[in-house]
Image 1 (tube, rainbow, N blue to C red):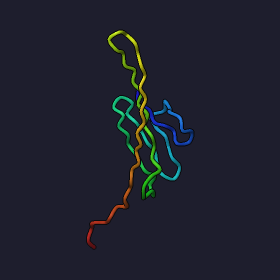
Image 2: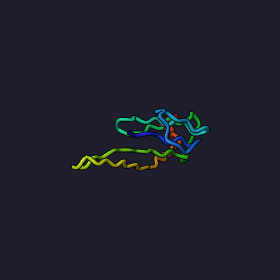
Image 3: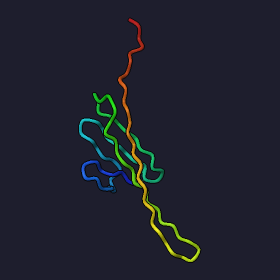
Image 4: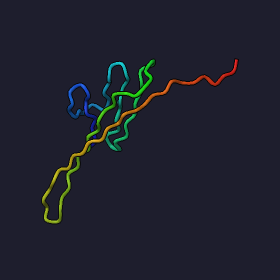
Length: 87
């Protein structure tokens, strides 16, 4: 499974979206683990980011199982839009 780690609690959450006040919201596709950041209207700069936790259970040839958990960080940077129109 792939889950967002809620920045407010530091714990993995079953919610597919978490919001960081003053920055925006992060949404995860629990199947692929892809994270999408939607910044608040006026947010520019490097976001606090979120962690993504992936957990998998593997079974060996004798039937013994082991659970593996890893985390990765996602820290997006939002740049201000530069106008391209000429007056």
